[in-house]
Length: 166
Ligand code: SF4
Ligand code: SF4
Image (cartoon, rainbow, N blue to C red; front, side):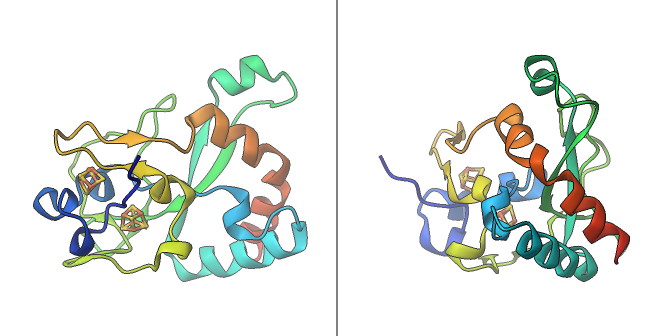
């Protein structure tokens, strides 16, 4: 099974699409993208990421909380920021785990006219595991919100420390 990425310069499927996924739901990261399980590495790299303004936070308070009682309330998940067209970056509004919110935004801060500016290994887990489909039914193979939340749950303090220091 092919798992090419939403980078349109090297994907016959993504090029005509133009990065709909990047414009609406940037792929979320996993702690391993930041050096997990080493907490110090994760904290340091997140601090740099938040300071850059190019990463933001999504969150989940759905199934993972019900299935895992130790997860109390919101679980933050690190993801690329989305440019709002007014010079600000933020993650798309999240309502109960959903992402779409008007107005239409410009897209992931890493999305350029010829595709993603990040190299393959630097892209979020959610981007690296997205399977494009010519019918537009692109399939995420990297897990759902609950999987991301469960993975990030042990790193909430690292996120808090990184945010506090920026
Ligand atoms: S992964 Fe899917 S939505 Fe994203 S650019 Fe490729 S075809 Fe478009
Ligand atoms: S990091 Fe790259 S591949 Fe992922 S959503 Fe942003 S522009 Fe698209």
